[in-house]
Image 1 (spheres, rainbow, N blue to C red):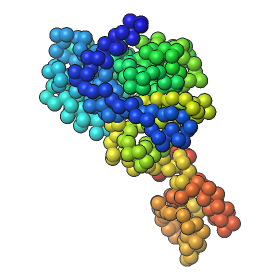
Image 2: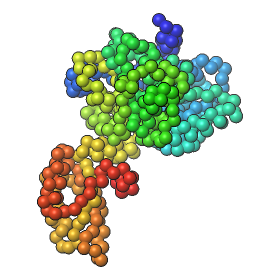
Image 3: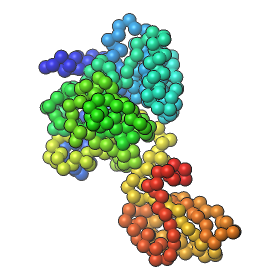
Image 4: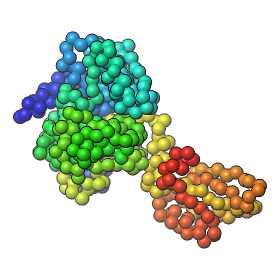
Length: 408
């Protein structure tokens, strides 16, 4: 057994004094769909509803006598640090992006109590990280990296120790979400070549893929914060050192809208609440189904800190991605009966979800923003045909991101 594996196993053992192992649960629904033996490692059921408590615990326990800990986090690492500050009776100063969901901010305060103070700064994580590091250097605290720290990586690897023990062996495939790379680096290092690791990133934060392409960590030009638990603009130096030999073909990239479909499905079908980053590994299974058939697969559901105020947006994005909801700009004649003619074109499963129209007396036609929900994507093909036959002029703006930001 390597030194890393020995340290990871030791970390896993002492964690049991603070919190229990998270469940490894076979998912019958996914197993039947993909013809594989699919298990979920439920990190969303940890005391802070994410795996981040592991790295925070391991790094902090090694700093005996340290009274001040500082971190930067989009939410999950913050909660892990806050939980451990309260448990250890030490002070924590936590920097979070201004854009962090309120649910994560409130939970951080709850876990840390009087032991922590929270600073909201920066629209993006990298701005928050710079502010936290500057403050820490001035005040002389110990900075707890969310991922780019050997002790944090070692702590996250305890997840893999549990998987092997709970499964009674090594899975054929492990599907891992990637943000800064701490958990994926730790788990991949534990399993080595004994298991095939598949890494999944959000489209708006694919920093591992960019680093593998360049041969070194690079800073992304833009980061989409929707998948806040994995929205990192640059993979860690230490984490990339452990992941740099991985093949590009083992790194999958998921669109943010696509991830929403899994959040909704897991909530409706399984009653499992996953945050966007926590849904990454489950959604990725569809892309690898050709070579996992008959195999044992573990998907790490990395977090369940979901703010239900975001549910309408998640549902909206899921519907648009799956093709059952579309938006149009419709050119409607300004004459009596024109609206009724349009309504008669709609099919029995078509439902108007949005309708905005302003009659302009000086024009022959007016523009209508209309949103339509339907039962099946193919219903829109029939709707298009009926609109064309009736002579209506329309523009589908569902995939027009520029317009969508302003009018949808």
